[in-house]
Image (tube, rainbow, N blue to C red; front, side, top):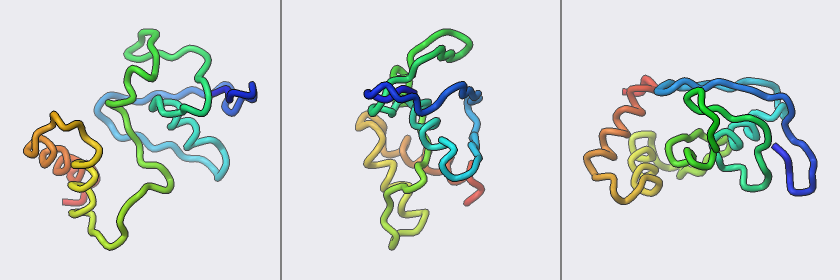
Amino acid sequence: LRLANGLEVLRNVSGTLRHGSLTCVMGPSGSGKSTFLTALSGRANYGKVVGRTLINNQPDQLWRHKFVTGFVPQEDTMIRELSVDQILPFSASTRLDRAVSAQQKEDIVNRVLEDLDLV
């Protein structure tokens, strides 16, 4: 990732994310985990991703996939007074496209709860 002033923030970084799976990125504080995930999810609007990016083993641009990838930032915005059962539907209703039906949103929330073993 190269910032507008030319400074490289990440160098020689690579990673593989498998379709349909949860991925954990670990490392010490300040090692670039959040920057790496922000760049990978196509949301690093403060800099330019340089280098080679492969999606499904084909050269591609990250920005084209930013609406089908996601991650929970270190400091996610949430209402502390709400339970997980209340936060997830609220988040789904405010973040998912309007074309997604209420039933689809409920199914997505239930799938997330199952994936996180919170049922």
